[in-house]
Image (cartoon, protein in one colour):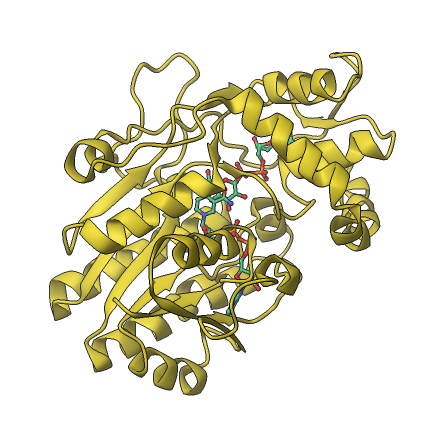
Length: 332
Ligand code: NAD
Ligand code: DAU
């Protein structure tokens, strides 16, 4: 696979994936990205110009998508509106990008008979009870809670329908919560790190007992590349790194690693429809494709991430005040 089209490649995980591909393969990459508020050109800086090109465009725009898909061997589809809280405030861009955008990609991939990998989320499965011994598997029924997760669930269903009805050469992955460099300050971990840097107390939604299954973005990238190269066409793979932590535990760890008292946080208004717990069973990806995460020590990965935000204030600072103002307006 020499020519890859990576949608959403200027976002948090997509940009990590582009760096990963350049470092670990000989492929050339075209990024198709609308450059929304969540994108950053800086995350793609330093990549070799003869191997990586950025095309600014919308995945829901057929005229932009069709020739790009035609000119590449495979498409890795990351582009999405990705933040649950935003989807509660205004679902419309989520429907357009995540559903119409995926439909547009699928039709182009079908017309030109290209390989597709669709990147999705564990949120399509809804949530688990805190004491449930089960984790999500590829067979867990879909039960999304938010406009974001429902739009991603719909996009997964579209991909599977195109596989079954049209024989599309595609795979799907559903991953748990990512952390690492270049994540927008609206998201939980960067928000709390940058709050502490600014002398603001971290904000926990509701009780803070909600559990997320954390994985480093670099491990998500290596898993997606593994599936693209060796995955069985038509199959879905869950991606996770056994990183379950309650939000309370994560906030306390951030505070401690940043030299503050572990209880120097505030409880704020809960998220509507807030999922309680996500947990991934990634045995299929590990046993069938031999994938393993590299970042198995969450505390060490979090410490690196804190250092990265301390050293990259120029990057996150422009988005911080408006993000906090928007949360403050909701009592969060
Ligand atoms: P992000 O919000 O950081 O980046 C999304 C990127 O998509 C941005 O660069 C944005 O400009 C681009 N984009 C948005 N709308 C577009 C459009 N209409 N056309 C072209 N580009 C558009 O998101 P992320 O956290 O990097 O997530 C990437 C993908 O991974 C998403 O599909 C998301 O559902 C999935 N995912 C994310 C996580 C996570 O923890 N962040 C976990 C599992 C799966
Ligand atoms: O599980 C995968 C999903 O993980 C991805 O599909 C999404 O794109 C990604 O945004 C993420 O969704 P979450 O809603 O889990 O992530 P978020 O960072 O918004 O919140 C993580 C947890 O922290 C969640 O339980 C809500 C809580 N939270 C969030 C913020 C922003 C707080 O307690 N305080 C906060 O300030």
